Length: 304
Image 1 (cartoon, rainbow, N blue to C red):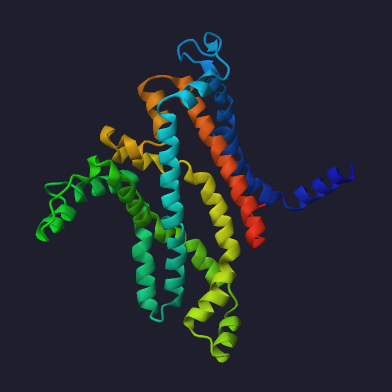
Image 2: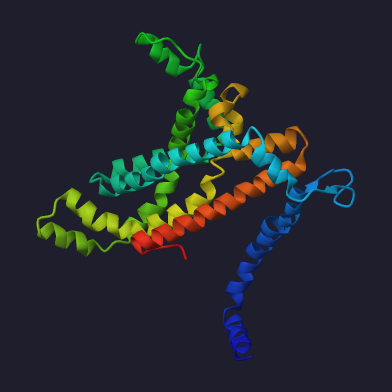
């Protein structure tokens, strides 16, 4: 009873802040939690015209069909491989960029670099994928023109499976690095400048200051961003993959999310598609919990 009274006093005191919170709560309830009711589709041989009442309950058959199917190993492997490339290449890049920008002596160059790397994030993924396809065109693409000038035979990169992961990772790196660096730049600005001054007086060079002050100062931010990215990384930006991949590149490009799209939207098997999506969500949850525990054990910093 005392807790209820205390909560009431807090709400009464900060009523304007809670009022501002209401639109966000409504959005989450309507678009994040209410659609979760549809997850039961994964346990039905769902017919969109008959609804749940007219559809057959099949239990875990959709999950078994996916796991035992010929596409399971390929989609899971591709998802994990592309996610691994993004963790190894795309995750550290914003940290390096943020440190480089803050360490620049020329503030004009620093601001121009930040702006130039920040702008690609606001280009539509459809436009970016179109640019990639045009740049890599075997006849008119600038990349193949350069290769031809130096005596290398032009290649149609977009239909060769061995190049897909590299192309996709490079595109993601270019588009997202500048935007993701903003968080780390904000964390770097918050580091006490007196630490740098004291280190300089003690004779520490630039690399020593980065190693002993800059990097430890943003470790908590890196940990939080890493755990948050692990949860999203299983989807590996499937919208861009849908726009880039072709049947000839399914071998290395087809991930769990794109497989669910084809099964549900193109083939109309909504039960199996929902089961695949639910499987992906469970994998993402496991990875987030594991990454959080690992981070807590190694760095003593964690999201919760």
